[in-house]
Length: 178
Image (cartoon, rainbow, N blue to C red; front, side, top):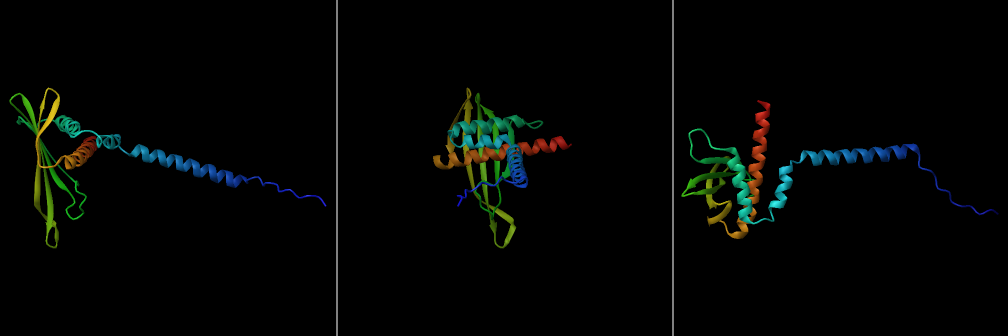
């Protein structure tokens, strides 16, 4: 009696085509996701490991790039975005003020946290205001007063920078459409 050996069946053309199609679709989806992520947001992940002063310097540069408004001798920009990941208050109010004082540039960041009152989520009251005060002298930033401790400031500054970069990106999109 002859010994039967198992022979491998050759994969059918349909299986090969399906595998190639799935691979191609996966590749193109991965590319689309990578392209759709703004490069600035990838840059933010690197910021989390930097010192607070370095991140503050990047915030300064981003806001300074927006420039002064007409007839003003200072730069004041306001932003609204979520910092505390609390869904009941949705966003915080951030003010960045830059002005010259005694041959130094003073940088003040004010963060206002809100809370909803009662059953109306549309009405919010300021529950806490925190400040970070610093100055820039010969390309070096020093924090001279902060309502945040060192751990909090290292967490909050990258989030503020990320929010500012994202809002600036949205401004550019709006300007292009005009």
